[in-house]
Length: 507
Ligand code: AMP
Ligand code: MG
Image (cartoon, rainbow, N blue to C red):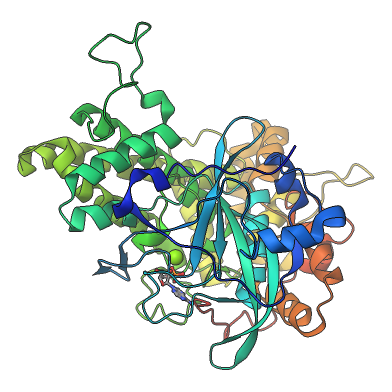
């Protein structure tokens, strides 16, 4: 069995992408290979046996069979300002591959050279950001957050110049697709309705095949199977939009559940598939505060932790705007048809947030008064600068029994701060403590990829090239709801609360 890719995005036509080959690198060497991911993608190669070939493939030096590399076109609102021409300036979509369940996954190289979309950029990626994307996306996947993943990191033997020279790398990203809100904006901005229809049909085929209308005999007028790809009904566009909204819901709610701050939620970094994409300036929150921001370029705190729900709504409104000409030729009528979906989305997010937070305190079906119970807790957390992860871990543990059968006590310092709140919570869950404990255990990670641990590891890996500690960290992060022997080494909050910590786009 050999590794073969197909690339049906490329077939959409010239306006969608540029056919361009990765630029070869001097000395490709396979640093990280995601064995579990490779297995699910049924890739018949291993690091032990095929390291050299994998380095050739996943640096872009050698083309995988069937691959027709492209740089995809897209636009995007960057910090609310529209940029009509972004696109893959340092990435190549090599093609896609089916996993054992038949689902197709994009295989994309990042840091693999320039394209027509590179603007001033060098098309390259430094090793630090590549490793960071690998660690963070693996952690997020294990946390149960919908996410793109990394299959490989290959060092290039070349330097990448930023404010100083860094080791270069090519990172391979795996995604359900790389269609972004910005991809729709690209065609909408050009008034290219024909391509918008093609893109919508492609996205439906790829992500929402249940929306394809199929009749038993393919002669029916309602049968999509043989219709041209630039034809789509208004009804289907609305269904497509609803389906995209439904994908964003678990995405943003799970970010809030685990304390993830994306950092650069531009519309080109929001996927139709609802996967976390672009780990450039992301970070994890330590002490709870909705205004937490670490990204050095997010000067107005647009993408602060607690703003992520409203930003996803903003991005979805931008997507809705691109779909208007497909919904109705009369713009007002189109708005009237699509607006209720956004209103419903807003309500679903509010309800979803309540349900998600309720689960973090063990309540399966929030009832009246639970909203206040949760709000009071997070207000206390904010006032007393409590660590988000540790607080919920302590509350969860307080419902467990230790080896002697006694209830595990909450730390005195936490009891003091929550002295008024704890009895209210205990009364609320008194009749279902065991179930509450199980729900909390599944909702509250015992470990997250804390910024100070991630940064320390990146530094040591880049300095020594030794991956031992990185692999230890990954082993812990891959079981974020279970305490293993090594977990305790990574649970500490930073002593300085990360007060001087800043992230960068990593470009
Ligand atoms: P990002 O900040 O990664 O979302 O990238 C925003 C845009 O800048 C995309 O069009 C990227 O392809 C492009 N870009 C970022 N870094 C580089 C680079 N080093 N070379 C070329 N293009 C880049
Ligand atoms: Mg991006």
